[in-house]
Length: 409
Image 1 (cartoon, rainbow, N blue to C red):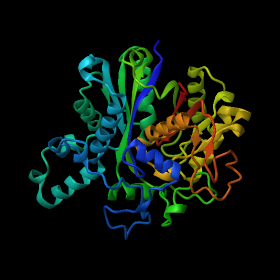
Image 2: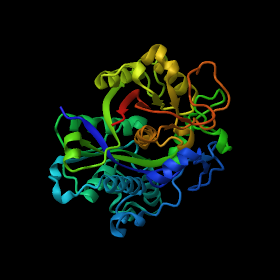
Image 3: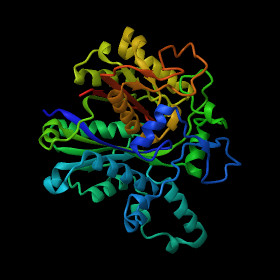
């Protein structure tokens, strides 16, 4: 079996449109929340979103190609192109059928569906864009990445709601580990800050009504009352260690374990006893051949909803036992908001940067302690410390749980 390493990373987020901007914003504790810009929110209780700002797709993608992509695909291709350039892969020296793409989207293009449905109602079926189907389908992020990069191996759109990014990376990790491919572009994307998207999550009472950016996404805070909807993309280049070393690639970290489970319990609420997420963490540690005491840091799913943060805390305690109280834990969503399918990928990138730089960011906005959430969530200031092993958690509607363990190389 192959060891699997990370050799490239790319991101487009509400706090930075590339890896350097994103990480500098993380270190600065920048929050990416502002009033929703794409539509009038007068009838909405949710007023804030974490939107990608100042993004011009033609800065990164050929103009003709960009016109054939909806926004979520543009974000994904931009992140993947950055990751591939960072990995410095020379496609002419590779067997393209050994290069794969596993990049998922939780919802595809709600914006595109809304746009074309309005045309259908107003002007009839002959007036919608003839490219509507390939613009809005969720698999088109992965497909467009494959086209742009020339990766001709397995190309998949893993869809597990908010666990999409982590499951995509985990499945790509397995494909390389068991020899199906040498290289994979893996991650997630979503862009659904749309009227329907916001209305749908608002109707679930999942979105915060806060209008204060500094008290909107506040994971593990006693006053938390919902998440901030966001958009973005995160893509990593994974390679077998042998392949990376043969071509002299720089190596950021090694992925050593992956666990995936389903609560099989409720369509929106995680298991109250944390058993599903705990088992995913346990499976990741088992594959990595590490003990709870070996883990330095957990990047929590941490959505800032009442039950998610409580039940994830229970899950971490269940998985780590007494070692849970020695972990450093944080939630990147305190700055980026909830990027849905992109969350797991962007948060694994955060873990890797934390390993590389020995810095764990604070859970920004966490002020009021919740007695039921009593672990160390990195309140206040970030912490400079060696990070050798980190785990990234993701939970998705439908009961999907995923955990990825990454180690310093």
